Image 1 (cartoon, rainbow, N blue to C red):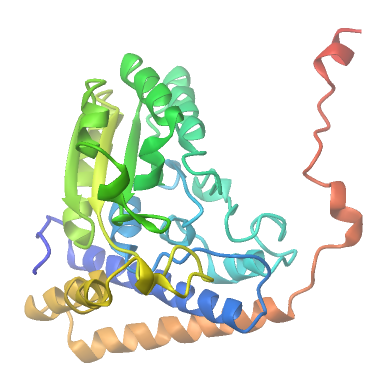
Image 2 (cartoon, helix red, strand yellow):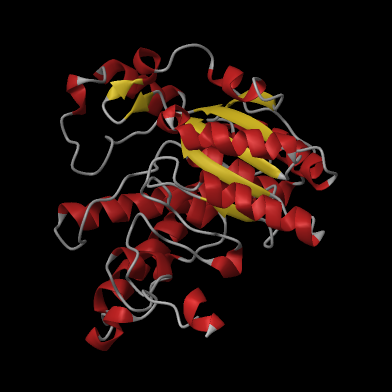
Length: 336
């Protein structure tokens, strides 16, 4: 299937290709770090869903904000995170984005507008909506995108914040990455009705788009972001996609709940990187050899970043309380 063509120029297309490859390369290395027992804790792979993060984040400016999920590496990289700092964070090293204290599921980088990933399902929805409210109150044209999975549509917080966002016409886009599974259960077995109807009940304009087609995602996201800047938000997106790995890196028996032929189909016929690559070659924008060279360079960069992170120092034990407690006086103390 060919991706939808947009009005972007050649460099935009190639940049989106590079960004998707960067996410895939990061995840391949993160998975290997876990399997080799070099990474503490669990992590949740984003491989297969790259077109969602890249298609949407390419429509944003550095000052626009995102909130992410426990499956959030792709969002972080798409919003501008660097390999070295990302791997350092996963390995608990002091050069990580959160000085190694957040780990895989809690990466944040406010310098890039990344307000943070959240291990709680749907946990960042309130943060994203609050960010959009801040932008409106301050007269900023910043837009906030809230990434979450289909499982989060069962969380009550989503309905509370969508109600507020609709009432106050906030510049926020709720981006539901529907990969077909909520942990180990098919989404259609636990989610009644149409996911879009959940947003439409609040009068929120909702769209469904092929989450494997980065150009289709980017075209729609670009339109909605600009409309948000004009005060026409909020919006809701359902992006149909697929995760290549299990729910987390330790989920090695996914054949018990997910058909092998289904997984093979998505990887062979619906891979977002391959879809864009084939289109770039067919359009004469780049040759297969040129795109293969891009992938080789990015994988070498990722491997070098892993080696750097493995050798990097851990935080000093004296930092155990740093960023845990605030220096701002308690309200009662301030009144004394």
